[in-house]
Image (cartoon, rainbow, N blue to C red):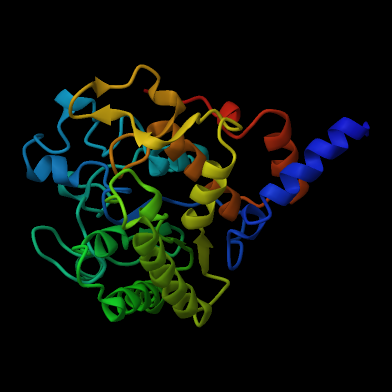
Length: 312
């Protein structure tokens, strides 16, 4: 190996040390019968769109296919890779129970993740061959009003998310993927001066989630660390095709940016479909294990972004 290539690989290995530790455990490389999903707008593939007769998320502003993004989200890409079929909304008879705006345990205009899972378990027999996913918590952090920080509420929400996973295990689920919350303080939605506070709340939620998951059956539960993935992407601007990691592509004043494929954020909170593809790659790595050095080499030579063809 040449000195320059060795240096490149070593640099990438250091940068992406966190990626190699994404999961508490790796699920077996088995064929999944389907993906059954719970969570918020980062996973919603049409429930809010159906509930609002297509007005939210508004396709006139560039939102695609009922997703809170400009194209496919991570679950769509993951489903393609696992050959489990398209992710369709539960309100349309599908297996995606996520609702944009959902919180962990508090139900207001939409069912919480806790309520989503309870509703599913009340009317379905758990499929032991399915992959169950849960991504929740961002809206609990976004509920912070900038004045009163309820750290106890955030900590309890993180612990409750682990409890939701336990309820699926108790019901017979054999493969559960949990994604923690990304750094809300780094998103364009974060008000100026509150970035560090929101980052701290994100870390607090994730810490309590991790502590709760540590007590569960590690042969069933795996964790995808969105917080670290987001920070790593932001620290390596352009390496994977994302050249803008701070601004929203969609603006209320200027409309849609000219190069959405180079943006991390579609709007003030949600990732672009390009960023969702990177999330899907990380999620796929936890259920289809590969030699640890291989993804690092691929990233060093061509970037994860270049390894996947995006759909608009």
